[in-house]
Amino acid sequence: MSILRARVWCLLAFTCGCAARPGAGPSAPEAPSEAATPPPVVEVPRTVITPGEAVTIDELFDRATAALLKGDMEAAAADFDRVFSLDPKGPRAAEALFRAGVAHDESGRYEVAESKFEQVARRFPEHQLARESLLRSIRVLLYLESWERAGQVAMVFSKRYVEQTPVEQVLLHGARAHAFLAAGDVDRAHTFVEKGRGVVERRRLDSVGRLPRDVAQLYFALGEIRRMRGEAIVFTPLPPDFPIKLEMRAQLLLDAQNAYSETMRALDPHWSAMAGFRVGELYERLHVELMKIPAPDTADTKGRRDLFEGAMRLRYSVLLEKGKNLMDRTLAMAKRTGEKSAWVARAREARARIEGAIRREDEAIDRLPYTRAQLREALEELKKKYRKKS
Image (cartoon, rainbow, N blue to C red):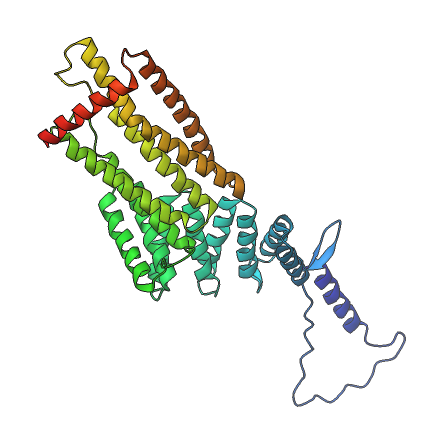
């Protein structure tokens, strides 16, 4: 009970106790009425009193709402948090908790936001905002790369709400796919991605223009599946069917790049940074794998080994150039949009690493006793030999 309400009740009690005039004699007893009328109940809005202000819960909620609408997320979050903490079972509690989550989300305090959304769904499962809270919780968890938790919340949503919109289905399937990818189960992840893609195709969610963000995360999961399957193909020790294996890995790289490119169509800076970094990384890692290939047995002299090394460096240096270009584009997008996530930092580090690798490749080629023209001729000879073997 607030101080104001206590004062009101004390005043009422005092008034009732002093109904008779001072000094008046005893009055004659009144005849009992057939039905006694109960005293009126006075509802007083709960008031929050601090050293600086005294406001009701409703006034505090309205002030927070106004701040939210103006874009003052710091003030909105603080006031919505106060509304809930002061009246956690009141009529404004669920909505205040939800809007606090929105304000924290917009302010970049994603862990706090996710906690608010989770509380709405758990404390007020029957409230009309519980459904949206679970969806927002999944999106924030995916952003935070809390893949396992995102999959768990997706399962909760699926059990609680059997009827789902197409976009909700895509989000849920994507979250489950990411959870399985985090656990290393690529095949089960692929099953959920295909379920999501089925919804996308039937509903034409990716037909033209900008993709919904919930579709973007599904395509990112598809890119991850293809990337992981491609990187499972290694070249040391050199497989007997090397040309076939190289073609398979190159095709999976291109397929992964296509899926990541679809992710970028959502024009979401965070998912675009993730996808851009992954594509550049694909080329960088392929280069690393190929440069581990040892010289063949036929390279039995230093001159032949140098020729093999130079041909390999010349041929596959294009992968580094491609990777650097993609990192450059990712960083340019981040600068343009103001994206500052960890993926941008990774892209910056990768670009510096690739630039160093390009310099080292050029220096290594220049040290060899062969011109680039001679290396290209040697490269053509290697191609012919591998074609005959395949």
